[in-house]
Length: 206
Image (cartoon, rainbow, N blue to C red; front, side):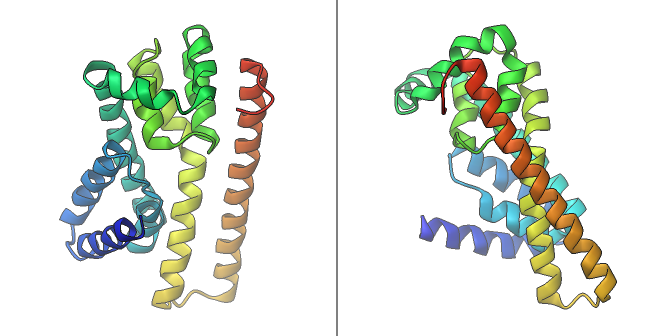
């Protein structure tokens, strides 16, 4: 995996140097990582460093949504057997499948908020459930925001520090407060989602 991390760093550096076309290349690379079940946290962090907070977050979100939607349809249409074999390694997913027909959007949203399940594989796994694609896409798009924003925020802070952005002490303080607030929201929402998941599925821990 360290070799893959190095390749992703090199790809991100090349993309950042591509100018306007770099954004589209980044989105495609991020989506490809989702489809290949390759953890993309390096790209999420790197997007903030290379593109800044706002644009970096937008690129990560679009790439993640593209990959999540493509994986969902692949799991539902073409890779059902492979996904079913992989699901056997995650007994907690059986609890999701048992209740997803009752409240699919809510279950998708909760699992996106908590890091219990691997993001990329979950995209395929939801394709096997009875959740409607529209509900899956909307709930995924909303649920991935807090954690994603935190990683991009951290990358943006690291990038600005490395470049010597010339921010004043007050501006850095404001930036730091925003970072801490984002981290707090992500942690609180993640824990709340874990508790709600346990309550809905009747499991002490997913």
